[in-house]
Amino acid sequence: MAHGDVIIRFNDVSFQYSTNKPILTEASFSVRENSKVTIMGQNGAGKSTIFQLITGELKPDKGEINILNGASIGIALQVMPAEYVGLTVKEFFESTFDNKKHDIDRDIARVLEVVNLSVPTQWTVGDLSGGQQARLLLAHALIHEPDILLLDEPTNNLDTQGIDHLIAFLLGYEKTVIVISHDAAFLNLFTDGVLHLDVYSKKVDWYVGDYYVVVEEIQAQVAREQRQNAQLKKNIIDRKQKVNQFSHKGGKMRRLASKLKDEIAEDEENMVTVRREDKTIAPFVIPVQEFSGAVAHLNEVTIIQDGAPRDKEVNIDIRKGEILRITGPNGIGKTTLLKALASEAHTGMVINEGARVGYYRQDFSGLDFEQTPFEALQQVMFEGSDQDVYAAAAHFLLRGDSLHTPIGSLSEGQKGLLSYARFVLQQPVLLILDEPTNHINFRHLPVIAQSLNNYDGAIIVVSHDDEFVDQLDVDSTLNLDKLFK
Image (tube, rainbow, N blue to C red):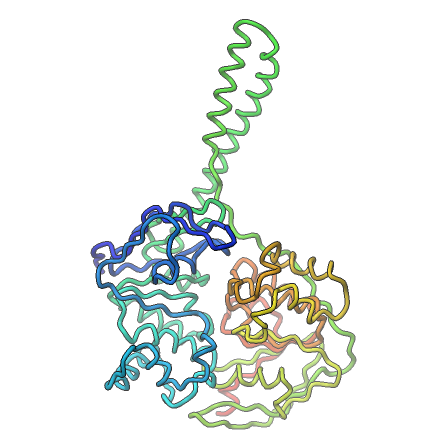
């Protein structure tokens, strides 16, 4: 597809939040019409901030942002905002229009077909699964057919079929698409350019090519910069030694020392800031509550089929040291089942008395966004001191200001790491994990998988991330779809 005029241009844009923490420094780049662009960078580099600057939700401190005259913008958020949860699907779409739209039913049907979602429009948004809500958010952005489509982690909560459908749509969408995602395989199928944000230099670099080509190019650039700096450091050390030798002598030797000092200053100026990737969390241990016998027993499951609940008897013991995976397509009721199990509202499962349960919710609704991470960790700690809270938080890269600001101001990735830090302090005997890779940087996932494998308690997991699940020592799988056939 041919690219057109420049539709977005950042000219020397600088931005920082009220905490005086710079996010961007004199960032300049442009995006052309019809291009498919990925934004990549470390946690906190400003990927979501770029989106907010494009939409006008944030204003730059310096520089200019120009959007092609008349270009409309649609953004698909990664998490359903709380104010929409109580609306019906139809009301959710109506909220995008300033005035009543008489043919909205037709438009809703069109965008729901585009995202491969079939739900009655009188259903409540909060009753939909995480995957269905993810498709709904995309449809919400598409209903106006925006010239610029912004997607933030669009594959979160989507099953394989949903991801395939999204890829096909993006390839055929003849307008500009900018995507933030950690899903490398997904990105590589449609990306033709990458904006790389660096959290350390606050700069933005533009690369042309598919995702894997760009990643290799960045790695090669890092290697070149490291070699250059290594040679410059060697030269600086050698010259400083000679300066120390010559500066105390007279005549030509002193003049030579002065020249060497100038060369040292030039080499120090030529040192480059080598790109650094996100720090990966270190291996961790989730202590397990002392407990004897089966942790829980599942004797019945409920699914949603054709909009109605259906029950099926099962006979599954949940024991320490075992991992049970629950599978099924979006909308069948996996999240609803896990929510009921965790709250012990599901009569088909009995959690033995006294068992502590750790619950990873895919939308982090179990966290109080008004609390600070420190308070959230204190709240669940089984035993220990404030030092244990600080240690657990630091292990999951939550330090300094981020530990004492409201959870609502954290990135989604930080909220995910906070959830794992809570498990460490809670010391549960049962973990219920609903899409536990959502929003987590891919570098952390092998560490998390290994820690879950080493966990001596019981685990019930729902995940569409097959690559992650393949790293787990799953003992049994409960396929809800096949169970009712």
